[in-house]
Length: 410
Image (cartoon, rainbow, N blue to C red; front, side, top):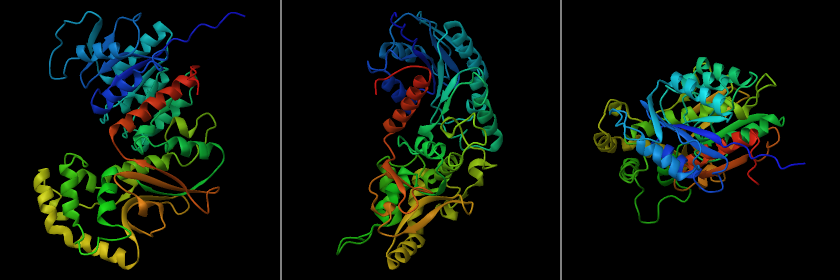
């Protein structure tokens, strides 16, 4: 019997070459992955640059040329590049172009959405039905309303549809969604999930409220002081109000909820798509904001941080109450499938809880199931740097490649 021909590389069409997107491209470059993947296009919010040198080796040189040729969205193309073609494409037009290229080349293509916008998620279902796979850390679709999620889930049940993975959308690079998928697919039942899902809020409250309390003779750090230093050192969003609003935690908790219940159809699995249970997505999650009412409309981040100093008293009171009860404060999401409770709030946890010993910006999930009923399954690790999110995206692409016959020797 003759040796089988090598499989054609999986095409990578990346949208959003920002911080995460560029790290994803870098992580596709190592020699071990080059036989399996080829970056065929890179898009920003306006332009797409395609690699026209289909016979050249894959790797860093290819994506470097594409990045160099991609015009900023605010400028017109220079027309200098000869090894690439540039087009101004809307999301639906990009999907059509990629599907046409896949049909012509016979190679599978993964649409890698590294944006945070809602433009591309609206055409995920179209891409899947066209045979493209979608890999993304974008939270918009899996945390979105029912009308956005339903077409994606239904598309995956169609013959010839591509695959959908979004591990990087929840828990940075931690294996959260894949673990939930494995539990559910093997017949386990998710009973409750408690989760610290914001690296920023973890960083803040791991300093603000500790098991041992402040050192003898030293005053306890005020809430506003910790937020100020976190903002100064780059541990928050450009505007800390985005972190303190709790919205990011709510988005991630909505995603967890959707992956915690099996599909009713046997043709789909939780690993390849969101579950359709929250009608309004993130808006269905009860969310406590930590933003003082007087600062809600403060748009300048520095003025916001300055203003927090006048609102330390409520946080100090909550810390004192937790200390009196022998507990610590953590901003956590809770999903209880038995009662239907799903909320994000500042809560008290006992010293023996996994959240009490968190440090730095670490995330942690305690998953209680029918099998893990006495002691939860705990997943814990760093909430950033963004390299871990990029690695989750690449790992999802590897899962797609494996489903299409590629072997990575592990």
